[in-house]
Length: 306
Image 1 (spheres, rainbow, N blue to C red):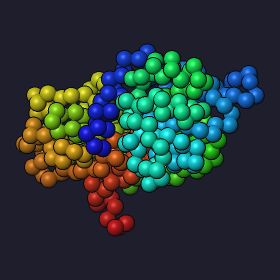
Image 2: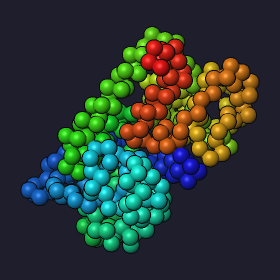
Image 3: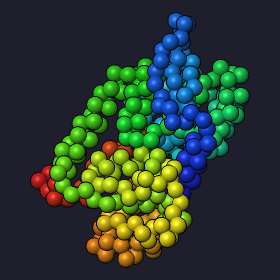
Image 4: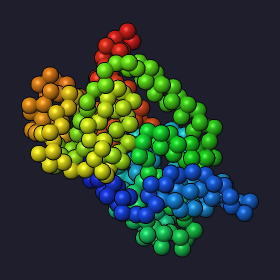
């Protein structure tokens, strides 16, 4: 995750907290009276009416673009952001601006059936502008690894690729189960997740990263702090004393904050860097991050497989 994605991540957390009903999970209600449409409930609790045969979609976030491809809907993606760089095919899709400042004219010109967003910062503007042109907006908000998997199934359902989505999720679940069984019974590591070095941002109560670390055999020492991505003071950080630090490796965030200089993690060399594109995007590759973190925290559990 580069600096622009970090800003998007923080903005996402702040905006979603401010919008009522943002804790609702997305699900398919399919209770439309029309034979040509279905109704899906998105992460804001809104009923979103979509065509039964969705043919053209736009993604306004890298994690959603990755999900669309993972569930077999890449051929329906007609627009994505300048940050959408995985898989390789996503780079060739028409760009409609960045996540926080998409070009509305470009989106409208693509005539999508639905625009997928993972930030609600412009939801009111989207609703006013796009609704007039019968373009739906569907919000996805994953606060846990389970939410990521559920969103994959739902997006596959929307895109008409539910069987492919179920197969993809089943594969990810098998990999997660293997990690769980490998670290089961081993000492739980006290982990600090560093999203940004200066200022010091971490994973709070509402961040899916905590569950990722928990699956990998760790316990996030900031999981009880309110919010998704809180900015910690030096005084708070000094009191944490984690025995391992997991850094979401991105521009300006390669080493632990100086507040951890005397922590057990730094003294014992238990500082691990994970590619931020894997760890900080709530999409299918978060399972890659879980596997890497598990190997870092409990290398002895995976010695036989090396």
